[in-house]
Length: 493
Image (cartoon, rainbow, N blue to C red; front, side):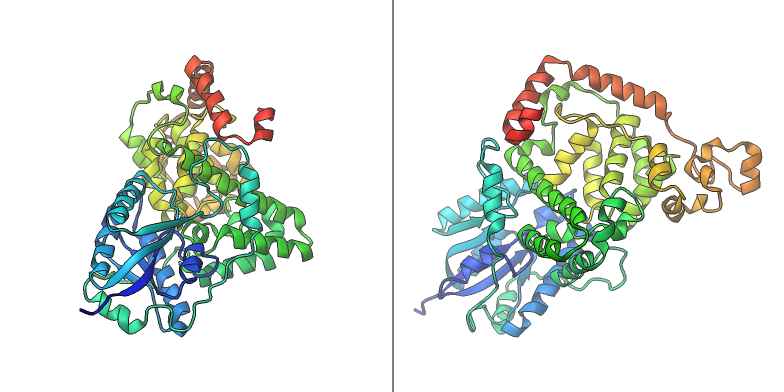
């Protein structure tokens, strides 16, 4: 009987990179050959939080990885199958006693999948080695010492990718393995309004940001149009792991030494840390996917309006900045942070819809969908944490302040393109005579406002502020502060 070859398997998830990938780095330490694996798992492909734009980004990332692996005569084994079935099939050919991956702070589906896979590994005498991803630490009960732990992780030099000669499973061998699986079609359209996946493209965005674009970062960060070039635009590359936060921090520090715009880079660095903070919060309290972290807000009941939700999703609310943001997001997969906050505020406060009803549309549209940021941010913007300042964004005030020429509005709401700027911000102020002059009929060519801003703002504000005085809300607020807030911030609170 021929003895099976003993190999290491690296299970890639949201860490689609070779450089600074601890799972790969550790797997390559042994003398065994190494197989790099990605599974297009049906439970995720069919999950309502994801859409085609995500899977195309992942396919482009894998294609880019395969180009990087070509000099090593290897590639990623990418299959349409769940992880248990995939490893089971590989066990018919190889001896596998160790599987390497990063810890994933994902949705409840991946949490259950990982628990199931852990049992599978135990039953098959496999040691599943998981590594910390982007400073998010599993098993913490509170934030005591978290800053120091993360600082230590980020201080380490990014890990190299240095396989030994012929250590990676060869192309010919992978092709023979593929005969036992259904394979994904990795080719995607060349013409797309979305950012292309892959480390190569991610590095281009990162380098151009450090070379030139970062100088206007602080000035344009809140502008819906200008932020598209002055912000880094690397969020999808971090969300899907083409870049690691650690390597970005190191590059930021290097750039800061020679840049004239140190404050801009400091602001950028603080947001990288903010990213880890929110994902850590989700890691420690995963029920945030379905319910408000502050249990006192579970008693808040809102009437579902399907017509409001459809109008919001399609960008047909009658408020130009909201509509421009939603159409831009639907088309390109990107909005800057302030506009993300604004559309969620409008949905939860002015339309008075539960934040849960916005989760799947936004997750499907955000190319950089990151569960650990998505759900905590939705709750924060909805005003249901009990510890954050209640912010109800006024879309008219924001459009006048951050899109004064209405350039962003006119680009994404072409029905308003020919209006003078004041009416582009507030078309509902036009008289019938003015509508005739501009050849537009409100209610037909562009919707009238579906709600009254002032009345709905008052209702939301009064309700939420009164609820913050509720005993359960207050008790929960203290619990949240103790568990999730850093020591110096807790004192300030």
